[in-house]
Image 1 (spheres, rainbow, N blue to C red):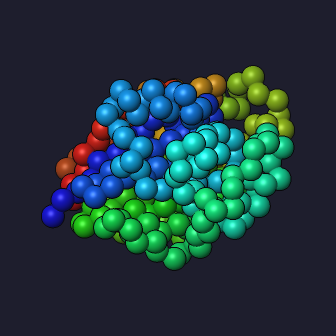
Image 2 (tube, helix red, strand yellow; image 1 turned 90 degrees about the vertical axis):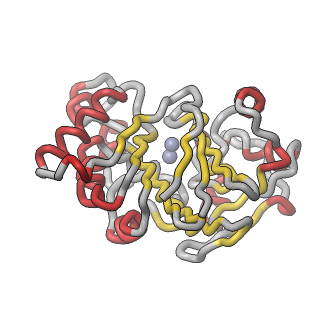
Length: 269
Ligand SMILES: [Zn+2]
Ligand SMILES: [Zn+2]
């Protein structure tokens, strides 16, 4: 049975966008990269707009929705989000242009969406946006959980990761770098709160709980100020050792680039 491939076009506070493609068609998760840059990347990677059937949003922060309006109006792509995310977009003062009602689609948490062989299930991820979802994505035997802008781990998130054989998870900040870094105290508090972002340590503990059934893990939304890709990777590797995980059960761990595409990853079971 065929798998699918994905490409991360950017991940972090400068803009988030993931492209998923199977033999029947493709979709995006988030549209946080400016439209000109996105079009340039699509050209570079041979991605045609006619292949993309939908855009699924996680939440209503600008680094996830920046080009949603252009994708809906210039490229005719239907946009999917929860009612809570749509409400958040409508009151977001940074977003002046409102996505036409005809291009808006409402998704509900824990209700699977089926199209072109894909099955996508949104689920709750705690964050300080109006609403936020993770996505459990299945195609044939390949199952990946996408969890970003995650203030804290919950049993519900764990239950979706439990069913996955691949994982994209936020590893936003190194706890020491955030504590000793230049951010003002209220912002530090916001980031580390239960509705903020996930630390390297929290991501590591999650990966260790699930590593037996995960073959690949991509670390996303890595902070430019409070983290480095190497620190995020080191924390996971030392967590695997600390938890005495058998080396044969180590997933492949890949930190994702913040501001440039990573190249295609091809996933089979
Ligand atoms: Zn974000
Ligand atoms: Zn956010």
